[in-house]
Image (cartoon, rainbow over all chains, first blue to last red; front, side):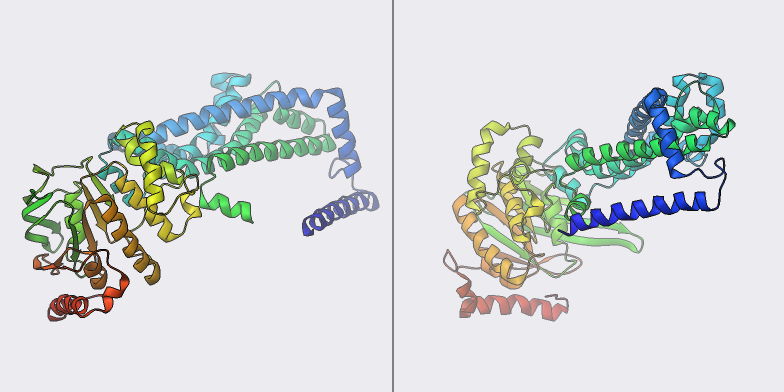
Length: 258
Length: 258
Protein backbone atom coordinates (compact mmCIF):
# COMPACT_ATOMS: atom_id res chain seq x y z
CA UNK A 1 0.00 0.00 0.00
CA UNK A 2 1.07 3.58 -0.67
CA UNK A 3 0.11 4.42 2.91
CA UNK A 4 2.95 2.28 4.28
CA UNK A 5 5.29 3.87 1.74
CA UNK A 6 4.25 7.37 2.80
CA UNK A 7 4.91 6.57 6.44
CA UNK A 8 8.33 5.20 5.45
CA UNK A 9 9.17 8.37 3.55
CA UNK A 10 8.03 10.52 6.52
CA UNK A 11 10.27 8.60 8.91
CA UNK A 12 13.28 8.86 6.59
CA UNK A 13 12.65 12.59 6.10
CA UNK A 14 12.53 13.07 9.87
CA UNK A 15 15.78 11.18 10.42
CA UNK A 16 17.53 13.13 7.65
CA UNK A 17 16.30 16.44 9.06
CA UNK A 18 17.45 15.68 12.61
CA UNK A 19 20.81 14.35 11.37
CA UNK A 20 21.46 17.47 9.28
CA UNK A 21 20.61 19.64 12.33
CA UNK A 22 22.94 17.61 14.56
CA UNK A 23 25.72 17.71 11.96
CA UNK A 24 25.42 21.47 11.43
CA UNK A 25 25.57 22.23 15.12
CA UNK A 26 28.69 20.07 15.52
CA UNK A 27 30.35 21.17 12.31
CA UNK A 28 29.95 24.91 12.90
CA UNK A 29 30.36 24.60 16.66
CA UNK A 30 27.21 26.60 17.36
CA UNK A 31 27.09 27.41 21.08
CA UNK A 32 24.46 25.56 23.05
CA UNK A 33 22.72 28.71 24.29
CA UNK A 34 21.97 29.70 20.66
CA UNK A 35 20.88 26.42 19.10
CA UNK A 36 21.28 23.11 20.94
CA UNK A 37 21.87 19.90 19.03
CA UNK A 38 18.96 17.43 18.87
CA UNK A 39 20.93 15.05 21.05
CA UNK A 40 21.15 17.72 23.77
CA UNK A 41 17.41 18.42 23.49
CA UNK A 42 16.70 14.71 23.82
CA UNK A 43 18.96 14.57 26.85
CA UNK A 44 17.16 17.49 28.50
CA UNK A 45 13.81 15.94 27.70
CA UNK A 46 14.85 12.64 29.25
CA UNK A 47 16.18 14.33 32.35
CA UNK A 48 13.00 16.33 32.84
CA UNK A 49 10.69 13.40 32.27
CA UNK A 50 12.66 10.90 34.37
CA UNK A 51 12.87 13.25 37.36
CA UNK A 52 9.12 13.85 37.13
CA UNK A 53 9.60 17.63 37.04
CA UNK A 54 7.99 17.99 33.60
CA UNK A 55 4.97 15.94 34.60
CA UNK A 56 4.30 18.10 37.60
CA UNK A 57 4.33 21.28 35.52
CA UNK A 58 2.46 19.63 32.65
CA UNK A 59 -0.30 18.78 35.09
CA UNK A 60 -0.80 22.43 36.09
CA UNK A 61 -0.76 23.64 32.49
CA UNK A 62 -3.23 20.95 31.42
CA UNK A 63 -5.63 21.67 34.26
CA UNK A 64 -5.70 25.41 33.60
CA UNK A 65 -6.03 24.85 29.83
CA UNK A 66 -8.92 22.40 30.11
CA UNK A 67 -10.75 24.34 32.84
CA UNK A 68 -10.28 27.60 30.91
CA UNK A 69 -11.47 25.92 27.73
CA UNK A 70 -14.60 24.58 29.41
CA UNK A 71 -15.40 27.85 31.17
CA UNK A 72 -14.72 30.05 28.13
CA UNK A 73 -16.59 27.81 25.69
CA UNK A 74 -19.60 27.48 27.97
CA UNK A 75 -19.82 31.24 28.46
CA UNK A 76 -19.24 31.90 24.75
CA UNK A 77 -21.91 29.40 23.77
CA UNK A 78 -24.41 30.69 26.31
CA UNK A 79 -23.93 34.35 25.48
CA UNK A 80 -23.85 33.57 21.73
CA UNK A 81 -27.19 31.80 22.05
CA UNK A 82 -28.67 34.76 23.91
CA UNK A 83 -27.44 37.21 21.28
CA UNK A 84 -28.67 35.02 18.39
CA UNK A 85 -32.12 34.54 19.90
CA UNK A 86 -32.89 37.93 21.38
CA UNK A 87 -32.93 41.14 19.38
CA UNK A 88 -32.81 43.17 22.58
CA UNK A 89 -29.83 41.29 23.91
CA UNK A 90 -28.04 41.78 20.63
CA UNK A 91 -28.80 45.50 20.54
CA UNK A 92 -27.51 46.25 24.03
CA UNK A 93 -24.67 43.75 24.26
CA UNK A 94 -23.17 43.58 20.81
CA UNK A 95 -21.28 46.90 20.88
CA UNK A 96 -19.38 45.79 23.98
CA UNK A 97 -18.67 42.41 22.48
CA UNK A 98 -17.26 43.95 19.31
CA UNK A 99 -15.16 46.41 21.32
CA UNK A 100 -13.82 43.69 23.57
CA UNK A 101 -13.17 41.38 20.67
CA UNK A 102 -10.84 43.80 18.89
CA UNK A 103 -8.74 43.97 22.05
CA UNK A 104 -5.80 41.54 22.15
CA UNK A 105 -6.89 39.51 25.16
CA UNK A 106 -3.33 38.46 25.88
CA UNK A 107 -2.59 42.07 26.86
CA UNK A 108 -4.91 41.61 29.84
CA UNK A 109 -2.72 38.87 31.32
CA UNK A 110 -0.74 41.15 33.72
CA UNK A 111 -3.98 42.68 35.03
CA UNK A 112 -5.50 39.28 35.54
CA UNK A 113 -2.54 38.20 37.63
CA UNK A 114 -3.09 41.26 39.82
CA UNK A 115 -6.78 40.44 40.18
CA UNK A 116 -6.59 36.67 40.53
CA UNK A 117 -3.13 36.08 41.95
CA UNK A 118 -0.28 33.75 41.02
CA UNK A 119 -2.29 30.56 41.43
CA UNK A 120 -4.42 28.46 39.14
CA UNK A 121 -7.40 30.82 38.88
CA UNK A 122 -5.57 33.54 36.96
CA UNK A 123 -4.45 30.97 34.34
CA UNK A 124 -7.96 29.58 34.04
CA UNK A 125 -9.38 33.09 33.57
CA UNK A 126 -6.73 33.89 30.99
CA UNK A 127 -7.41 30.70 29.03
CA UNK A 128 -11.18 31.23 29.30
CA UNK A 129 -10.89 34.76 28.00
CA UNK A 130 -9.23 33.74 24.74
CA UNK A 131 -11.37 30.60 24.32
CA UNK A 132 -14.54 32.64 24.75
CA UNK A 133 -14.65 34.55 21.45
CA UNK A 134 -14.35 31.75 18.89
CA UNK A 135 -17.33 30.09 20.56
CA UNK A 136 -19.33 33.28 20.85
CA UNK A 137 -18.92 34.27 17.22
CA UNK A 138 -19.45 30.78 15.81
CA UNK A 139 -22.52 30.16 17.94
CA UNK A 140 -24.12 33.39 16.76
CA UNK A 141 -23.38 32.67 13.11
CA UNK A 142 -24.42 29.01 13.43
CA UNK A 143 -27.74 29.70 15.11
CA UNK A 144 -28.59 32.36 12.56
CA UNK A 145 -27.71 30.22 9.57
CA UNK A 146 -30.75 27.91 9.62
CA UNK A 147 -32.03 27.48 6.09
CA UNK A 148 -35.20 29.55 5.40
CA UNK A 149 -36.96 26.59 3.78
CA UNK A 150 -36.35 24.42 6.83
CA UNK A 151 -37.76 27.15 9.06
CA UNK A 152 -40.80 27.35 6.75
CA UNK A 153 -41.25 23.60 7.03
CA UNK A 154 -41.17 23.77 10.83
CA UNK A 155 -43.65 26.65 10.82
CA UNK A 156 -45.99 24.81 8.47
CA UNK A 157 -46.03 21.99 11.04
CA UNK A 158 -47.17 24.53 13.66
CA UNK A 159 -43.87 24.22 15.56
CA UNK A 160 -43.22 26.63 18.44
CA UNK A 161 -40.12 28.84 18.50
CA UNK A 162 -38.73 26.58 21.21
CA UNK A 163 -39.17 23.51 19.03
CA UNK A 164 -37.59 25.29 16.07
CA UNK A 165 -34.60 26.03 18.30
CA UNK A 166 -34.14 22.49 19.64
CA UNK A 167 -35.02 20.54 16.52
CA UNK A 168 -33.56 22.81 13.85
CA UNK A 169 -31.42 25.78 14.87
CA UNK A 170 -29.28 24.01 17.45
CA UNK A 171 -28.35 20.89 15.44
CA UNK A 172 -27.87 23.14 12.42
CA UNK A 173 -25.39 25.27 14.41
CA UNK A 174 -23.30 22.28 15.54
CA UNK A 175 -20.77 22.37 12.67
CA UNK A 176 -20.05 26.01 13.52
CA UNK A 177 -19.88 25.32 17.26
CA UNK A 178 -17.50 22.40 16.71
CA UNK A 179 -15.25 24.57 14.53
CA UNK A 180 -15.29 27.13 17.35
CA UNK A 181 -14.30 24.46 19.90
CA UNK A 182 -11.44 23.42 17.64
CA UNK A 183 -9.98 26.93 17.72
CA UNK A 184 -10.89 27.53 21.38
CA UNK A 185 -8.90 24.47 22.50
CA UNK A 186 -5.64 25.77 21.03
CA UNK A 187 -6.43 29.32 22.15
CA UNK A 188 -6.97 28.10 25.72
CA UNK A 189 -3.50 26.53 25.71
CA UNK A 190 -1.99 29.80 24.50
CA UNK A 191 -3.91 31.70 27.18
CA UNK A 192 -2.71 29.38 29.94
CA UNK A 193 0.95 29.58 28.81
CA UNK A 194 0.87 33.37 28.59
CA UNK A 195 -0.66 33.47 32.06
CA UNK A 196 2.21 31.35 33.32
CA UNK A 197 4.75 33.63 31.61
CA UNK A 198 3.37 36.64 33.40
CA UNK A 199 3.42 35.19 36.86
CA UNK A 200 3.04 31.67 38.19
CA UNK A 201 4.47 29.16 40.63
CA UNK A 202 3.93 26.13 38.38
CA UNK A 203 3.34 25.21 34.77
CA UNK A 204 5.27 24.67 31.56
CA UNK A 205 5.09 28.37 30.68
CA UNK A 206 6.70 29.28 33.98
CA UNK A 207 9.30 26.53 33.37
CA UNK A 208 10.22 28.08 30.01
CA UNK A 209 10.59 31.47 31.67
CA UNK A 210 12.91 30.17 34.40
CA UNK A 211 14.98 28.17 31.89
CA UNK A 212 15.35 31.35 29.88
CA UNK A 213 16.90 33.08 32.87
CA UNK A 214 19.45 30.29 33.27
CA UNK A 215 20.15 30.14 29.51
CA UNK A 216 19.00 26.51 29.45
CA UNK A 217 18.08 26.58 25.76
CA UNK A 218 18.03 22.82 25.25
CA UNK A 219 15.65 22.63 28.21
CA UNK A 220 13.39 25.19 26.55
CA UNK A 221 13.42 23.23 23.33
CA UNK A 222 12.41 20.09 25.20
CA UNK A 223 9.46 21.90 26.85
CA UNK A 224 8.40 23.32 23.47
CA UNK A 225 8.40 19.77 22.18
CA UNK A 226 6.09 18.73 24.99
CA UNK A 227 3.81 21.70 24.34
CA UNK A 228 3.44 20.87 20.66
CA UNK A 229 2.55 17.29 21.56
CA UNK A 230 0.01 18.55 24.11
CA UNK A 231 -1.53 20.87 21.48
CA UNK A 232 -1.71 18.01 19.01
CA UNK A 233 -3.37 15.65 21.48
CA UNK A 234 -5.95 18.22 22.60
CA UNK A 235 -6.73 19.04 18.99
CA UNK A 236 -7.11 15.35 18.13
CA UNK A 237 -9.47 14.92 21.05
CA UNK A 238 -11.76 17.63 19.71
CA UNK A 239 -11.55 16.16 16.19
CA UNK A 240 -12.66 12.77 17.51
CA UNK A 241 -15.68 14.29 19.26
CA UNK A 242 -16.45 16.30 16.16
CA UNK A 243 -16.46 13.24 13.91
CA UNK A 244 -18.91 11.50 16.19
CA UNK A 245 -21.24 14.45 16.59
CA UNK A 246 -21.12 15.65 12.98
CA UNK A 247 -21.30 12.30 11.18
CA UNK A 248 -23.93 13.91 8.93
CA UNK A 249 -22.01 17.04 7.98
CA UNK A 250 -20.79 17.07 4.36
CA UNK A 251 -17.48 18.76 5.24
CA UNK A 252 -16.73 15.92 7.69
CA UNK A 253 -17.56 13.25 5.10
CA UNK A 254 -15.13 14.77 2.62
CA UNK A 255 -12.38 14.53 5.21
CA UNK A 256 -13.14 10.88 5.86
CA UNK A 257 -13.01 10.05 2.17
CA UNK A 258 -9.84 12.00 1.55
CA UNK B 1 -71.85 16.24 -2.97
CA UNK B 2 -69.71 16.55 0.16
CA UNK B 3 -68.71 20.07 1.27
CA UNK B 4 -65.40 21.33 -0.16
CA UNK B 5 -62.14 20.67 1.70
CA UNK B 6 -60.78 24.04 0.65
CA UNK B 7 -62.93 27.07 -0.05
CA UNK B 8 -61.03 30.15 -1.20
CA UNK B 9 -63.02 33.36 -1.44
CA UNK B 10 -61.78 36.62 -3.01
CA UNK B 11 -58.27 35.97 -1.68
CA UNK B 12 -55.91 38.88 -2.27
CA UNK B 13 -52.23 39.32 -1.42
CA UNK B 14 -50.31 42.53 -1.93
CA UNK B 15 -46.69 43.19 -1.02
CA UNK B 16 -45.21 46.55 -0.21
CA UNK B 17 -42.25 47.06 -2.52
CA UNK B 18 -40.01 50.04 -3.16
CA UNK B 19 -41.81 50.75 -6.42
CA UNK B 20 -45.22 50.69 -4.72
CA UNK B 21 -47.53 47.82 -3.90
CA UNK B 22 -47.14 44.64 -5.89
CA UNK B 23 -50.25 42.57 -6.24
CA UNK B 24 -49.37 38.87 -6.10
CA UNK B 25 -52.93 37.53 -5.94
CA UNK B 26 -56.04 39.43 -6.94
CA UNK B 27 -59.43 38.20 -5.72
CA UNK B 28 -58.91 34.51 -6.26
CA UNK B 29 -61.86 32.20 -5.64
CA UNK B 30 -62.06 28.46 -6.05
CA UNK B 31 -62.87 25.34 -4.09
CA UNK B 32 -61.47 21.84 -3.93
CA UNK B 33 -63.67 18.82 -3.21
CA UNK B 34 -62.89 15.88 -0.93
CA UNK B 35 -60.27 13.62 -2.46
CA UNK B 36 -59.79 15.85 -5.46
CA UNK B 37 -56.43 16.36 -7.18
CA UNK B 38 -56.13 20.00 -8.15
CA UNK B 39 -53.11 21.34 -10.01
CA UNK B 40 -52.30 25.03 -10.32
CA UNK B 41 -50.26 25.97 -13.35
CA UNK B 42 -48.84 29.32 -14.33
CA UNK B 43 -45.62 31.04 -15.35
CA UNK B 44 -43.03 32.10 -12.78
CA UNK B 45 -44.19 35.01 -10.66
CA UNK B 46 -47.91 34.35 -10.98
CA UNK B 47 -48.29 34.07 -7.23
CA UNK B 48 -48.88 30.33 -7.10
CA UNK B 49 -46.28 29.83 -4.36
CA UNK B 50 -47.83 32.75 -2.48
CA UNK B 51 -51.17 30.98 -2.71
CA UNK B 52 -49.65 27.82 -1.28
CA UNK B 53 -47.98 29.68 1.59
CA UNK B 54 -51.29 31.32 2.52
CA UNK B 55 -53.04 27.94 2.47
CA UNK B 56 -50.22 26.46 4.58
CA UNK B 57 -50.83 29.26 7.10
CA UNK B 58 -47.27 30.59 6.97
CA UNK B 59 -48.20 33.82 5.14
CA UNK B 60 -51.17 36.05 6.00
CA UNK B 61 -53.55 37.16 3.24
CA UNK B 62 -54.20 40.85 2.63
CA UNK B 63 -57.93 40.37 2.01
CA UNK B 64 -60.41 37.60 1.46
CA UNK B 65 -60.21 34.23 3.14
CA UNK B 66 -59.35 30.59 2.73
CA UNK B 67 -61.22 27.93 4.66
CA UNK B 68 -60.13 24.38 5.32
CA UNK B 69 -63.01 22.05 6.17
CA UNK B 70 -65.08 25.06 7.17
CA UNK B 71 -62.61 26.86 9.47
CA UNK B 72 -60.65 29.89 8.31
CA UNK B 73 -56.89 29.39 7.88
CA UNK B 74 -55.38 31.92 10.26
CA UNK B 75 -51.99 30.35 10.99
CA UNK B 76 -50.08 27.09 10.71
CA UNK B 77 -52.30 24.06 11.19
CA UNK B 78 -51.70 20.49 12.16
CA UNK B 79 -54.00 19.01 9.51
CA UNK B 80 -51.96 20.08 6.49
CA UNK B 81 -48.98 18.36 4.92
CA UNK B 82 -46.60 20.40 2.77
CA UNK B 83 -44.04 19.23 0.20
CA UNK B 84 -41.64 21.91 -0.99
CA UNK B 85 -39.60 22.16 -4.17
CA UNK B 86 -36.53 20.82 -2.41
CA UNK B 87 -36.93 17.87 -0.02
CA UNK B 88 -35.95 20.00 3.03
CA UNK B 89 -34.76 16.97 5.01
CA UNK B 90 -32.70 17.29 8.18
CA UNK B 91 -29.32 15.63 7.54
CA UNK B 92 -28.86 14.71 11.22
CA UNK B 93 -32.06 12.65 11.19
CA UNK B 94 -32.34 9.21 9.61
CA UNK B 95 -35.02 8.64 6.96
CA UNK B 96 -37.45 7.30 9.56
CA UNK B 97 -36.71 10.16 11.97
CA UNK B 98 -37.26 12.67 9.18
CA UNK B 99 -40.61 11.09 8.40
CA UNK B 100 -41.54 11.23 12.10
CA UNK B 101 -40.71 14.96 12.39
CA UNK B 102 -44.38 16.08 12.28
CA UNK B 103 -45.17 13.50 14.97
CA UNK B 104 -42.37 14.87 17.17
CA UNK B 105 -43.35 18.50 16.59
CA UNK B 106 -47.02 17.91 17.25
CA UNK B 107 -46.36 15.64 20.20
CA UNK B 108 -48.46 12.81 18.79
CA UNK B 109 -46.27 10.07 20.25
CA UNK B 110 -43.85 8.04 18.16
CA UNK B 111 -45.08 4.68 19.39
CA UNK B 112 -48.50 5.10 17.83
CA UNK B 113 -47.11 6.29 14.49
CA UNK B 114 -44.01 4.19 13.89
CA UNK B 115 -46.05 1.51 12.15
CA UNK B 116 -47.79 4.12 9.93
CA UNK B 117 -44.46 5.67 9.03
CA UNK B 118 -42.98 2.30 8.05
CA UNK B 119 -46.09 1.42 6.02
CA UNK B 120 -45.94 4.76 4.22
CA UNK B 121 -42.24 4.30 3.49
CA UNK B 122 -42.92 0.99 1.84
CA UNK B 123 -45.86 2.55 -0.04
CA UNK B 124 -43.47 5.08 -1.59
CA UNK B 125 -40.95 2.30 -2.31
CA UNK B 126 -38.42 3.02 0.42
CA UNK B 127 -38.65 -0.13 2.53
CA UNK B 128 -35.20 -0.99 3.85
CA UNK B 129 -34.06 2.62 3.82
CA UNK B 130 -35.47 3.58 7.25
CA UNK B 131 -32.10 3.83 8.96
CA UNK B 132 -30.28 5.50 6.09
CA UNK B 133 -29.50 9.21 6.08
CA UNK B 134 -30.78 11.74 3.52
CA UNK B 135 -27.34 12.30 1.98
CA UNK B 136 -27.18 8.61 1.11
CA UNK B 137 -30.27 8.90 -1.13
CA UNK B 138 -30.80 10.18 -4.68
CA UNK B 139 -32.85 13.33 -5.34
CA UNK B 140 -35.94 11.32 -6.29
CA UNK B 141 -35.69 9.18 -3.16
CA UNK B 142 -35.27 12.27 -0.98
CA UNK B 143 -38.46 13.73 -2.43
CA UNK B 144 -40.23 10.44 -1.66
CA UNK B 145 -39.14 10.85 1.96
CA UNK B 146 -40.54 14.40 1.91
CA UNK B 147 -43.89 13.11 0.58
CA UNK B 148 -43.97 10.43 3.28
CA UNK B 149 -43.29 13.05 5.93
CA UNK B 150 -46.15 15.18 4.61
CA UNK B 151 -48.55 12.22 4.92
CA UNK B 152 -47.47 10.72 8.24
CA UNK B 153 -49.78 12.77 10.48
CA UNK B 154 -52.72 11.93 8.21
CA UNK B 155 -53.49 15.51 7.14
CA UNK B 156 -56.78 16.60 5.55
CA UNK B 157 -54.90 18.35 2.77
CA UNK B 158 -51.62 17.81 0.96
CA UNK B 159 -49.99 20.94 -0.47
CA UNK B 160 -47.22 20.43 -3.02
CA UNK B 161 -45.09 23.31 -4.31
CA UNK B 162 -43.37 22.22 -7.54
CA UNK B 163 -42.14 19.10 -5.74
CA UNK B 164 -40.51 17.56 -8.81
CA UNK B 165 -39.13 20.77 -10.32
CA UNK B 166 -35.56 19.99 -9.29
CA UNK B 167 -35.54 16.43 -10.64
CA UNK B 168 -34.33 15.31 -14.06
CA UNK B 169 -37.01 14.76 -16.72
CA UNK B 170 -37.11 10.96 -16.51
CA UNK B 171 -37.23 10.82 -12.72
CA UNK B 172 -39.90 13.48 -12.82
CA UNK B 173 -42.19 11.40 -15.09
CA UNK B 174 -41.65 8.37 -12.88
CA UNK B 175 -42.49 10.42 -9.78
CA UNK B 176 -45.70 11.64 -11.45
CA UNK B 177 -46.86 8.05 -11.96
CA UNK B 178 -45.79 7.19 -8.40
CA UNK B 179 -47.60 10.18 -6.93
CA UNK B 180 -50.78 9.17 -8.73
CA UNK B 181 -50.47 5.68 -7.26
CA UNK B 182 -49.90 7.02 -3.74
CA UNK B 183 -52.80 9.44 -4.12
CA UNK B 184 -55.17 6.70 -5.31
CA UNK B 185 -54.12 4.59 -2.35
CA UNK B 186 -54.42 7.30 0.33
CA UNK B 187 -57.35 9.22 -1.23
CA UNK B 188 -56.01 12.58 -0.04
CA UNK B 189 -57.09 15.99 -1.26
CA UNK B 190 -54.11 17.45 -3.09
CA UNK B 191 -53.25 20.94 -4.27
CA UNK B 192 -50.24 20.66 -6.55
CA UNK B 193 -48.39 23.65 -7.95
CA UNK B 194 -46.25 23.37 -11.06
CA UNK B 195 -45.12 25.31 -14.09
CA UNK B 196 -45.05 22.22 -16.28
CA UNK B 197 -48.28 22.04 -18.29
CA UNK B 198 -48.01 18.30 -19.17
CA UNK B 199 -47.35 17.47 -15.51
CA UNK B 200 -50.36 19.55 -14.47
CA UNK B 201 -52.68 17.83 -16.96
CA UNK B 202 -51.33 14.33 -16.26
CA UNK B 203 -51.93 14.52 -12.52
CA UNK B 204 -55.07 16.60 -12.29
CA UNK B 205 -58.75 16.11 -11.85
CA UNK B 206 -58.86 19.87 -12.38
CA UNK B 207 -56.24 22.34 -13.56
CA UNK B 208 -56.38 25.97 -12.43
CA UNK B 209 -54.63 28.18 -14.96
CA UNK B 210 -53.19 31.38 -13.48
CA UNK B 211 -52.04 34.63 -15.07
CA UNK B 212 -48.85 36.41 -14.09
CA UNK B 213 -48.95 39.51 -11.86
CA UNK B 214 -51.50 40.12 -10.60
CA UNK B 215 -52.30 36.42 -10.14
CA UNK B 216 -55.79 35.65 -11.30
CA UNK B 217 -57.53 32.46 -12.31
CA UNK B 218 -57.90 32.38 -16.07
CA UNK B 219 -59.53 29.03 -16.48
CA UNK B 220 -60.61 25.98 -14.53
CA UNK B 221 -60.02 22.93 -16.74
CA UNK B 222 -61.55 19.57 -15.88
CA UNK B 223 -59.45 16.56 -16.95
CA UNK B 224 -61.74 13.56 -17.19
CA UNK B 225 -59.31 10.82 -18.27
CA UNK B 226 -59.74 7.53 -16.41
CA UNK B 227 -57.36 6.49 -13.59
CA UNK B 228 -54.84 5.09 -13.20
CA UNK B 229 -53.30 6.99 -16.07
CA UNK B 230 -50.12 5.76 -17.70
CA UNK B 231 -47.59 8.06 -19.31
CA UNK B 232 -49.01 6.88 -22.65
CA UNK B 233 -52.01 9.15 -22.25
CA UNK B 234 -49.65 12.01 -23.03
CA UNK B 235 -49.90 10.86 -26.65
CA UNK B 236 -53.72 10.89 -26.81
CA UNK B 237 -55.63 13.64 -28.64
CA UNK B 238 -57.57 14.74 -25.49
CA UNK B 239 -54.34 15.18 -23.56
CA UNK B 240 -52.80 17.13 -26.43
CA UNK B 241 -55.92 19.29 -26.64
CA UNK B 242 -55.73 20.20 -22.93
CA UNK B 243 -52.05 21.05 -23.15
CA UNK B 244 -52.54 23.11 -26.30
CA UNK B 245 -55.45 24.99 -24.78
CA UNK B 246 -53.57 25.87 -21.60
CA UNK B 247 -50.43 26.79 -23.45
CA UNK B 248 -52.50 29.06 -25.69
CA UNK B 249 -53.32 31.25 -22.69
CA UNK B 250 -49.70 31.89 -21.98
CA UNK B 251 -48.71 32.55 -25.56
CA UNK B 252 -51.33 35.31 -25.70
CA UNK B 253 -50.07 36.75 -22.44
CA UNK B 254 -46.51 36.30 -23.61
CA UNK B 255 -45.15 34.88 -20.38
CA UNK B 256 -44.17 31.25 -20.41
CA UNK B 257 -41.22 29.25 -19.24
CA UNK B 258 -40.37 25.62 -19.91
